[in-house]
Image 1 (cartoon, rainbow, N blue to C red):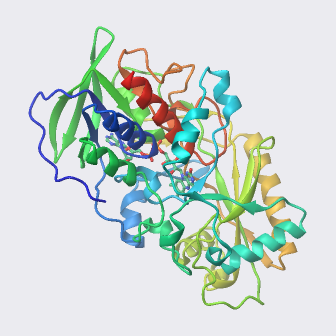
Image 2: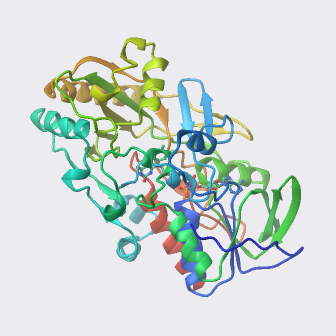
Image 3: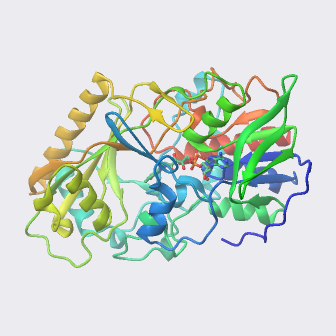
Length: 437
Ligand SMILES: Cc1cc2nc3c(=O)[nH]c(=O)nc-3n(C[C@H](O)[C@H](O)[C@H](O)COP(=O)(O)OP(=O)(O)OC[C@H]3O[C@@H](n4cnc5c(N)ncnc54)[C@H](O)[C@@H]3O)c2cc1C
């Protein structure tokens, strides 16, 4: 990314809009505003170091306990990315369209935002040569199990994507995977400013109007003033900032979209590129049941962590011949996000959905000829709903404090169980245009 050299902010500086966090939601608002000539400052807790496609860097972004990774109760792990571009830097790049009917209910029409963003993003299905051998075998298994298993749309610049490469999961070093860093760059090239290592603590407001934010950089507290503040610090980050700013109900009753992987070995598959694959190349979504299935071939150390976590040490060396099917569900609302912890338990319906998805994944694996089938513990990477539209924010994403908006997973009004990024970008585009008006 080609960020402009950071200047320091002047004490008591005032700008048009402050955007807190630069994931898909925040970066899209910032880009839309900067392109319309507004002065925008993005405050980002993480760093903008170039993505190197290495496990160690990814771990620093998403696996530091209580920062990128949270463990609680029966939800084994919830992940988020603390870096420029947010979780998009390390996500699986799967695009799913916004659930229009759900947003229509709240008076939000995202159709024109979809059209505008599709024209700006590299949205493609993978050509066959980029679909790895394990994912290809899963396609065959799923189709012979009677499922309508189709290629999924991806945020990928196909011309830059490499065969037999697994590094997108760690953060693509070849700029093949789209990340929100592309939108940050666009905002900066239109005059926006980006400050990294800047952790926003709370929103300043008086008499029901936003005044700015207080943030910490290098251990020093600063204030930055604007009468419009957009919180886009993610499904965990924004509720926390809201709580510290006087919104006691923020972070209650949220969702996470739990995931498990169901794995089985095929002994007749021999390919050096097996296991070095773009995850989620193809799959199927059952909106009524709240279940999504897809291939999920992860790099070897991550596969080994899954196997070790459930005591399957006998499978540690079988990465290249193990088919992994992801089961992701829509979970019921529940739990709380606290100042440095989160809690959320699976409901009995959540467990039933996971069981149904697991049975479907087993059928796929058996139809693909796999044996020694086992499943991982569940984890999650889509926290949201902690500041819902229709509850803490209105149809323009504005809170009860005038000029204070929330534009990230927190605003999603209902559990949904789909890949969130594109919807959050649509909300960001819509909010940006609204603020320009
Ligand atoms: C492993 C993984 C795989 C995924 N796969 C997919 C996928 O295939 N498709 C898909 O659509 N989605 C996927 N997701 C989810 C998707 O990436 C997130 O839902 C999306 O990035 C959320 O966007 P956001 O703007 O709400 O917040 P985030 O992306 O979480 O961005 C929040 C930003 O705010 C910053 N921040 C947090 N707190 C503060 C603070 N106090 N002050 C300043 N900055 C702060 C963070 O550093 C970050 O940059 C995946 C996520 C993970 C972790």
